[in-house]
Image (cartoon, rainbow, N blue to C red; front, side, top):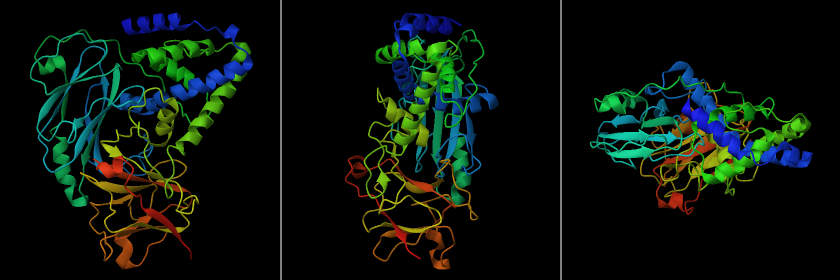
Length: 449
């Protein structure tokens, strides 16, 4: 309860701009800016509410299966790793994540705050392959970190999304990968240290998720207002919230815009949604049909538009040092990728994706950004694909088409849907060439019938 009281007090202090001071054009512009600012947090609510509806907070859930077209809670999911997930409620006390020693297999735990910024990582790159215990702390905890922990991760959010990825090296490896999941453990600090547990907080109530891509755009503000008290906002963010308060974007309050500005705010929110949609297809400068990952992904600071665009297109993207995600919407001639056509994606010899872990190419339905169902149940190809056939010179040619190719080429075939599609080339633990832009992305050539 104290957090809500604090948030309401902050909201009151932010109300330095009043609705009466705004004309219609100012209200519309402010609503558009506020929509872009709030979008990622509200899209994040989709996963938070889904977990909260099925699992208790602070319970780690690891699923030993690869995601497919039926999984629709997260846009652009990977088909490379087993996922682990938990909703961390840090209001009462910190949580402890314990991991086993993991050799010869990539793994990572990504911690995402309410703004969809990534906190520090736990995993192969960040903490190594040894066993360890890590303390995850919210903004209200004032205690000293006890001994016996390998690291402390601090969050500005009282609710954190914990997302684990454990590499699966093909179909035959799934049983061994599943055994790794059994070594992960999550528990409160009091249990880990056999100390007295603090009083339990009030039950965590999250607002119902409303589809951000359809319906009235301004509905997003009500969800944002309900979520905002769970985050400790920076001074620059508080300055923005001070201005947004005039249109009813106020942490801890119901969204209730002034009647005289209601239509202008609705139009501004719609303009904000269109701005985010367009930006999601222009995340960087296009190269041969590919948009490289934004350099600030996962650490967006005050770049609200990139934050929102990433949430629209592939929310929960890793920091670049963990993974990069070049996205293709067009072929090499600038034409939109269409599943009714045939394409060849060619990696020249010596130009396979430069990684220290592994890489994959995943295909998504262009309208939903979900995995596209196909008859052979294949959604990705990569360096762990057992039946790939490399070119005689060491290069690699992948086939993107709706119908099966000749038998000898079927290991290199990624089926396409009937309609638009896009591609994500994932590079896990990318080498320097992938980070500095010197790596040349592969050419996607349309093959004429």
